[in-house]
Image (cartoon, rainbow, N blue to C red; front, side, top):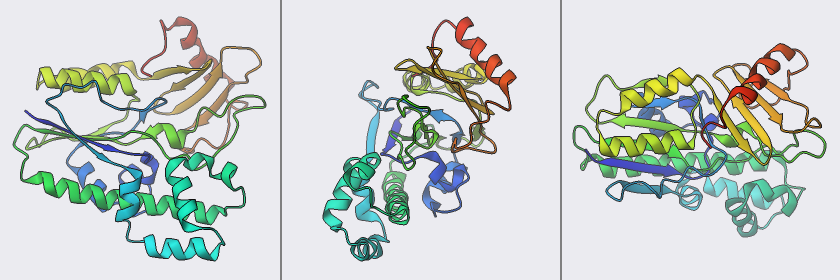
Length: 294
């Protein structure tokens, strides 16, 4: 068994058709989803890089720069940038380096232009993935594993969680794609709804490199846990298939709650309407031995 890892740079799951997006066309990644186990809630705060994986694993990367070059809408985007009065080289360079910092670089950038930049990145990533998957097709053998995963998300909405709090939690940034294809296996596909993190991902890769039958046990562990608890800089993220709760380790931080089926982008705080849900989720912070998978 050979494992092929394909890392996608800065592409949130919610920008892909196979994760429910209808604004962007992603036919190649959507086709990959039909032959894979799709992890619906792969949540990342730190980068999900797999540099510690066994060296026998084949690792490929689709960078934002590569995606921008492969986008079919690049010419129209350049025209749009020029019409808005920006230098296309400077703007694209700033976007590729730090999309979250565009407002600091120039707060006058229209939202429509920011969305066009993101669309260009999504389209180019899908096209680059399709070309890479076609190149790999001749090498794949029955029993091989193709893992497509997002390494970092694209920050398209910047906001503070509360006055004085750092903007650490952005669902559109932390929710990344993760698809696992077992070549030639008809039964290993579908959706895994339970949330999982980077450590879970690394555990899966390590166990699969040692035992080709480890997938079933790993999947069962994730499903039995039912939730993911992450901690960074004194802020907790508690995520289930239904809820996202943000809580701090001090009394000044007011918990925030988002109902994911209706609000996958985490825009509407419903904590005042569901205080009992906040209380139930935050109880886990006191009873849990520590955060889940960072």
